[in-house]
Amino acid sequence: MTRAMMKPKTLSHIKNMVGVLITVVAAAISAIPMSAQEFKVENFRYLPNDISAFINPVRDLNDEDCALLKVVAPTDFVFSTPLGIVKREDKTGEIWLYLPAGSRKITLKHAEWGVLRDYVFPSRLESHKTYEMTLNYPRVLPQELTYEPPSAVTIRDTLVVTRIDTLVVRPPRQKIPLEFDYTAAIGVGGKAPYTYCTLMAAFMKRHGGYLRVSFNGGTPESVEATCDRHGLVDGRERFYSGATRRNVYMVGGGAIHRLSGKIAIFEGLGYADNTLDWHLAPSEGGGYVRNSYFSHKGLTVEAGIHYRFKRVILTASVMTLKGTEWFGSVGIGIRIGKDDIRKILTWK
Image (cartoon, rainbow, N blue to C red; front, side, top):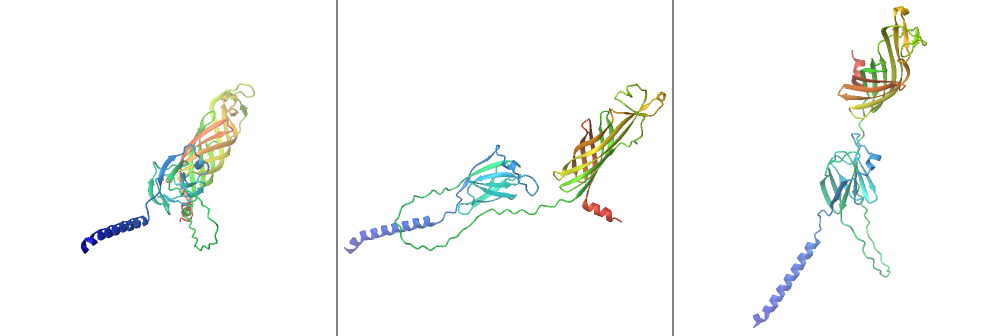
């Protein structure tokens, strides 16, 4: 009789214990913190109409203009890339990251929402271009405020303020050594085309200067008179033997600028005195008459380019004499560094 009365109570007790166990297990699972990544890249696109990176360029360690990545996210995100981050600017509602051209990956970190490691861009970032990355992250909605009667309550707590930022480490810019360039060129031009030689010496770091001398080896001599384009002297026809004498003397100088490790451009001003003399026939008594149409002197303007391959320099330039005569020249030369000059001066 006693076993029959205790059986229903035992079953009920077991059911109660199972219910309590399930409740405890569920509470323990819900108490485990979730550490998985809670944000992702929702959109990445190129902004063809945004010229922020072109108007205010930022240069990397190779002296090349960076690409600009605008991240639409709160400012407590931290970023890193294999090529580094040249500069970071926190704007309203977004973060501007200046990245070296050629960057392909980026890692995003947040203290609460986890890490998105090695996100791959659709293509390598290019200089002067602006891109936008939009993140999808948890939004914290404002809670409803409920009115409670004021009460005198004293609260003691510890306030901890944590600032998370991206540290940009930029080593000092590498010093550019002083170099000397020496070139020799052949030029041609003028109304009656003629050739001449040019010797040029330049010195520079990132910027510098140059000196140039051009000549054709002629010797200035006196003339008996001056004729026009057709050989008339004071309106009177003269007879000529057909021999001519050309004298070319041009000097100049200016500035030269290094654009990269191989290319430099230069521009400058100078003075030229180019003459053409016609030889009179023996029946006219010989001697020379200067042709005023083909003879010019005055201010010259020049611009050109240097291309360097190791120590060899290839050069090309264009020059005009008062806009009336135009000349072009090409040449070759050698580059000598500061250490090479020191060795030459101390050589025994």
